[in-house]
Image (cartoon, rainbow, N blue to C red; front, side, top):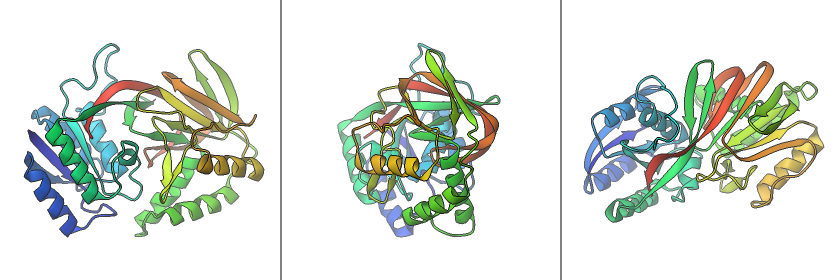
Length: 322
């Protein structure tokens, strides 16, 4: 089995010694080529190269951002590309993915059931390789202004993307993206958020239009993220085997927001309730349109401000050794 391992040398929870141990362990099980990512977008380019050269597996040691880039390189080998034609098997002819968590949240790896520790996760992956065990998962896809990008677990428009943008700014100044920093940033940002003028409208085939949406969380699985070891589940019914789910807020008052936060941190299997919420489950496609540019994030990666984004489900998009 030929495998390419993509290593993010700045991954949050690994160091050089750990990486060397993991590389030796994987190299004993497969014909391994190792590449370090050096700039934003590099993982996508390396994954596209692995696909073009006929590798059987692409492994990633890194966080959710590096994994997202890799997935997009596997599915869109040329410049972002187009969505696979309906009826085709999107995973056919592509390398399988191996995930070894090395970031601060590791949402995709944990959603797959992998241990959060990179050494333990490598052990689980080696077992999957020996047994030929793999799983096919669906992905989400976001399309805007002629661009297209897949996401593994979530996307968002509005307040949550504004928090991601703020934390990325802190990371750019050398601070780590810890759970405490996310919570503190979210609280500070909430106090400065416009709570009177919602920007977005939700539409979609067979979906009743919903106006006055302040923020929207779009998920491809559950949990949406973690606060340390605590799962955050705004859309508890979401899974890799169904379409996309959405939770939207039409009010941003302290009472409404506190109620939603309390629910999604404590009620893992029940949907949040309230007239101020907009919810979708297992949808193939929908669109968010804003009357002004709003922040947009995808798998925890801030992608700027957008006015219209269409979200689509891509079933059976990727094979994962797990």
